[in-house]
Length: 220
Image 1 (cartoon, one colour):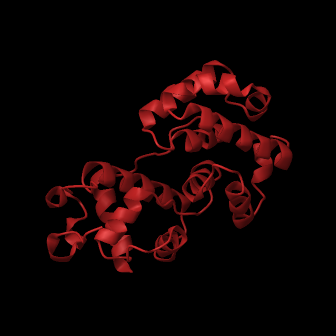
Image 2 (tube, one colour; image 1 turned 120 degrees about the vertical axis):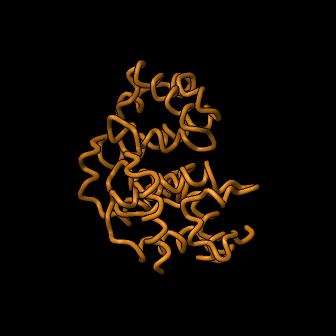
Image 3 (spheres, one colour; image 1 turned 45 degrees about the horizontal axis):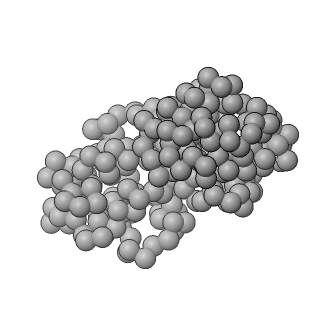
């Protein structure tokens, strides 16, 4: 489908390289992927800052920390008690799987890693793929609500399309390039927040308008 590649070209002309995901370490990205669930990035940054100042942005340190302590530091991200549990499960998996040594994940097959991440309660497909793409540099395509909305409105897929089906559509129609996948996803988030809103989309000013049938979106 040529529209998939062309849409990225239009977005890149507008946004360029967005350099997403902002983080200093692989583990920080993994933590951020959980903290960003159901909140905005500004809140995530506050929570990550708190964890860093408390010395908890290391797998072993978080593994040994009390659940209540983690929850207290990530309070700005919302749903902090649930997210603290998810973080403990993540570091528990890292400890049991690779002894907390993230370098040992490099040689693990992507599909195997994805299955293991999805087996951690509280980590769904989007969070798992965030970790795989942004932290572990694996060529997976992250699907979020913005991606689904844009794909349906442009008529690329029907509304009943599954997460994995939509991810495959992007992967099958783009070069296998981690950097491209990262920047495409980041640009889609920008389009979704700015133009392709859930209600009253601003199609007239959207960089992707050229690809819309009759200049208007399909109903989602």
